[in-house]
Amino acid sequence: MNAGETQNPAGARAVVAIVGPTASGKSTLGIEIALALDGEIINCDSVQVYQEIQIATAKVPLEERKGVPHHLIDFVSPSVNYTAVEWAQEAARKIEEIENRGRVPLLVGGTGFYLRALRQPFFVSPQTDETLRHRLNSIRDRHGAEHLHRLLDRLDPKAAAHFYPRDWPRVQRAIEVYLQTGRSIMDQKDERPDPHESSRRLRILALNPPRSELYSRINDRTDAHFEAGLVAEVQQLLDRGFSPRSNALGAHGYRRVVEYLQGQRDLPSAIEQTKLDVRHYAKRQLTWFRHEAGVEWFDGFGEEIDILQSVLATLGSGPRSK
Image (cartoon, rainbow, N blue to C red; front, side, top):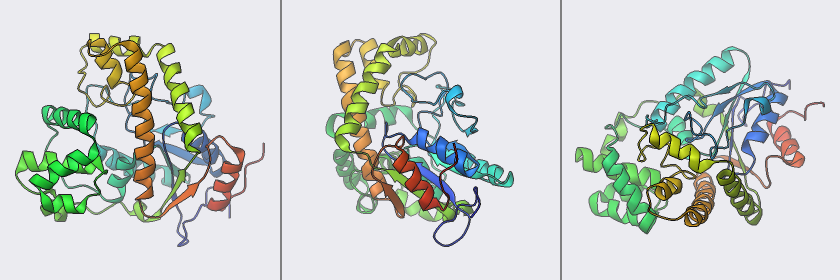
């Protein structure tokens, strides 16, 4: 098999997704695979889509991308609450464009909700009510994802029975839809568009590094973000009028800085809570992908040569020559 001709188990040309928890080395692995397979990367991270937030996003600098084209990264204003539906539509177009160039599309990132939107498109839902979302985010922060599921069970038992209790993005959206429309999200399933044909050719490869090492990386990276000027970056965005309730500034790595700047906590608390938030996020990412169908797992970090070789072997191509 030639480079660029990866196949899924059924034999059709595959679209490759490299996923896993934050700080697991997905970006590094994605670039190496793209080089080996003549591929282009489509960002699948809900924070990296935003412009002007840089320090805590782990975007790969241009000079470290080794010439691999990256798409859907650093292109949305922080004032826009970019949705999974919008990402899925854009990703489908990018997949077609990349394949029309004879190259391999690689979806790289850890936002499982984005990937699910591509595989199982959502119905056309009401516009996000930012006040309601902020309230639900606050409830989830204080009481946990299971509390949101119990709230959904009181409002919409049909939807609650369908969703896993810790699948908080879908649970939260179901609550929003019910409160905004008075209808169960389950009654609107038939209004979903068909998935893009590439979703049937998707191979999802997930990193599963040792948990203690992953958490140590997260802690060290968080310290490095604060040392690199994360507080000043957020302050500048707030000074320019960007909402502290935006999706961009509500993301892990940013929201505790906003709380510090608003006088709700001191700086050491913001740093430690950010570390805890990101560790919890990594755990939720692993849980999410374990509940996705057809995921192929690799036990290690993306920078490890053994992982790269195993992934390339799985995809049907040997490692590239140096």
